[in-house]
Image (cartoon, rainbow, N blue to C red; front, top):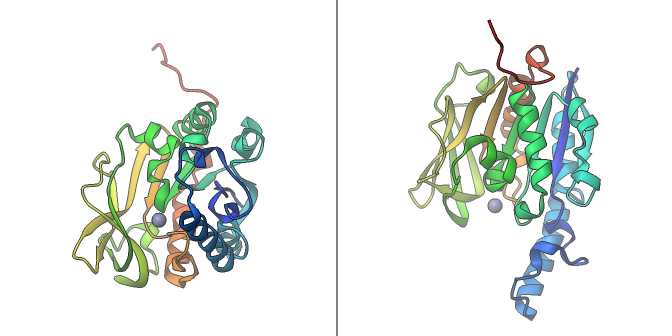
Length: 258
Ligand code: ZN
């Protein structure tokens, strides 16, 4: 079985009830609070309470994948202790508004495990999360606009992540992410996105980092239903299979005298 840990910051879902550190500098007038509350209700409605619930279901549809742990920002060590990561073949990470509230120590631990063979998949707005930035070494900034249509084109049909996936997946409602996306040139480019506004985006990218693999996948804005699309779900499961390589797992990385 492939051991998966799903990590969701789990902040926007609760913003109508709780205040989080990331909100301290926000201008929260009545209109902003109403919008935050409506957003929280919508996310809970789409995702059965929380984004990690949707993701867990995606992976549990696969008899070869076991979701061993679910972590959130509020948990001790964000639910990503050394023991949890040792028990993880692939970490799946969704985050957005509270990226900077993840302790550096946790980000460093995740990056170290990836370099020593753990697979990691960063979803949608996680392009700005600390572990991804640390692993790629670039700003990962991009252009964005909420509320567009997307065509997700497969540009590498023989790639394992694209197995059984159509040439183009149309998403009626998705957030536009556009170039320039400040990432290192991907080792493998699997999907390209085109949006209603004419923008294009490298939407499915793989990088090798040490003994581990990193996959970034763009669809999945919190209020949209992209993760309910069967073809998108297939991509997420394919990616877990591709990223899981326990045979490459290392206890430590060292320079070997010869
Ligand atoms: Zn988004």
